[in-house]
Length: 117
Length: 112
Image: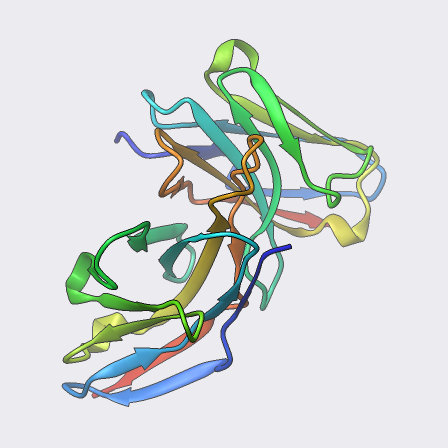
């Protein structure tokens, strides 16, 4: 079975400072990893994905994430936070080897990111 | 707008009633997913269609839940004999590949 852990319910960062939102995962095979963002009263928006290749992946709105296979982590990062980045962030995983049409993503519980002016 | 759409956006129903939600995926996407999200939790996978075939169903999908995707286009999710525990946000997503899924705005169900 696959699982995702987001150890922080909330992360507070001052505007202009770098931010990190943590995610660790567990899968049987090789992971497909994703970050989504959810704004109030809106659906989930795709930010970025890791499938294969470079461990540092870049996504929307200046976000990036680093895949670390030995630590089974996929932390979300941004060099300089904006107040508008304040939202709920979800990490998700799909096991590459699950096959058989089992394409459903497993999500973490989410991390509230609060950027203070 | 070419995104995933869901209707209705909000539904309030009394316990024991049946409800049906609709999802219209991005037109060229052949994969369609249903998830349920409760307060303070991430989305939980319910079921998955590739074209019109329902290929995966979660254990969360009890016998009271049924989903269809006739002709491989829009999909409906029906809940029969609703219970208060069914109150949640029901999310639909679509994808053209095995990679990222694009989510709709969701249908918020409140069972009184």
